[in-house]
Structures are given as structure tokens and as C-alpha cells.
Amino acid sequence: MNIERFCVKFLARPGTTLDDAVFIEVFHEWIRRHTLPGILLDVADYRHVPDGPGIMLITHEINFAMDYSEGGFGLLAQRKLGQGTTQQERILELVRATVTFGALLEADPRVAGQLSLEGGAFQFLSNDRLALPNTADGFAAIRPDLEATAAVIYPGQAVSVARLDNDPRDRLTLVVQAGTVDMQTVAGAVGALV
Image (cartoon, rainbow, N blue to C red):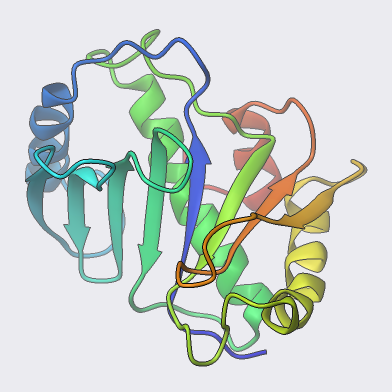
């Protein structure tokens, strides 16, 4: 399997009552201070789009969004460029970047205590419908790579990888689940920069 365009999403825990506007201020500051590795470009406000990407931090390599699509509010990261020669390496790299982003966001004083991301589960979304269609064959093709990557992310834990039952015209979405794990634990397992 060789998929270059994909996303991962970590959902927010229930009870998040944060005003999205705070992300605009946070992300602009991160650009000014070069808080994340890579080239941070811009902040986009898509709150007007129903079930859309919300507030986004656009970087050269990854688009990060405080997203409302695909089953709820959470942190979605869309890979545009990156390292990794195998699919497992590319998935792990995007998870590492997303967990770094999430841990920094949870710790930001403007957000702390108001946002908690579920570290024990994430979604994998294919952005390449030709190479990885939303079919049983597409699921079978990517599942081994997700299972192997999940073993690194959640060492020693029982992990399930299931296909989200969505419209076949939508992106193939898989849910990787390992139980109750916080983002700091995941950050340690994947070597996130926090």
C-alpha cells in the first residue's frame, strides 16, 4: 500500500465547551513564535461551513483543523508532504505531528482544562479515492498497515481497526481504538515533540 494523501483525526472528549474563536488567536501566535516544526503559513476560519473544518492552521506539510466533520469535533491533520518510505512510517509520522499539536494545544493556557483529546482512538481517512476506495477491498488493503502502526502507538494494548459505516461516496474512514489513553501517553509512545 502506498497512499500519500490521508488524514488522521483525534476526537475531543465529551463535554468540550470551548469557543472556537480562541483557536484563531492561538494559531496566529504559534505562527509568530514558530511553535511547531516546519513552515507555518496561515490561519483559516471555516466556522461558517456546517460540519466543516472549523479553524485551520495551514502549514507547508500538514493542514491542522479543529474539525466538525466525520463523526464529531476533534483535531484533524491532513498530510500534504512528509517523510517515510513505507505506509506505516507515513501514518506514524502524521500521528506524531498530530499528537505533538494536540498536546501543545491542550497545554496552552487559553485552552487548558477546556479541551481534552481522546488519545486512545483515532480515525484514518483516505484522501485518495482512486488508490484507496471506500470499499471492503480498500479496507483490506490498508488494515495491515494500520494494525502494525497501532502496535507502535499503543504498545501492549489490545487494538481494533474497524471500517466506519459511511456512504460509499465518502472517504474510506477507519477507526483505530485502543481504550482509554491520554494524549501524553500517546506522545511518549510515538516520540512526539512536547
